[in-house]
Length: 303
Image (cartoon, rainbow, N blue to C red; front, side):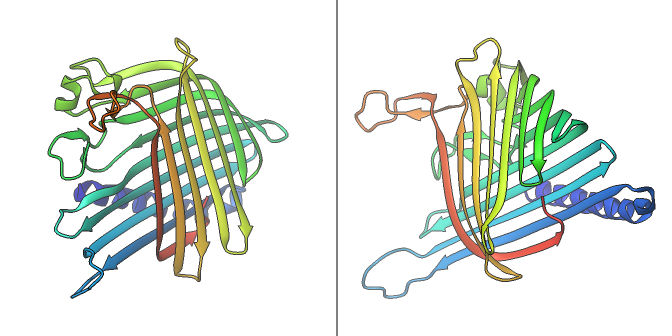
């Protein structure tokens, strides 16, 4: 898993260097590259010795990185974005458990067709770095790198009146679900047919993003996406991320994040009889909330 993180970080570093060089050599040709990155490391630790009130020692950390490279010349715009996040926690004598694991890569090519409207081709990929398990300290793996992986690509229109807001409407979109792990593929995980490594769906895609500094040094950011298969538009796959960034100074920051996912093909353990025992599986709303304080470094112009 660490090797995967290093490889991705190395590739991003090279791309940022290359784009920075492109910016220097093409400025006289009215070509604009805006390249930026933002990295943060959040850490929390509790140590107890002879503490009468009781409790356990704890250790938690979370690292995130955002990288963007945006091109604009004439009526053509090309935006690229990469987000990576990973974190773990340890409570008492328990082993480390994963608390965050996310890779998001997106690219968007747009052509200006009228005021604030673009014709676009958009593609985004979501996956994770490391193995995931149904329960803490469980030995039964239920996910890993590119199992699942979700690639959505589509053609449509974008309404972008400012850098703080966009709305994408793509009536022609394809969603590919990857399960590249042999053991997960064999049992037909994530809606892929048993023994197959991918599944195709044709439908419509919608994305909405809003980012604004709502108070001095307090930025609100939300990204909402939906994909619906034309064979069953009664059910849509939803991803909704909300982030509140609080900047203390140039290097210290805090953030509050909420992530919500609903996918009909992702089955989670459920209690079907109401007796407190998980005895089945089914689609459910997945919810994650995190609050952290730590170090942040920003280079260039962030998206």
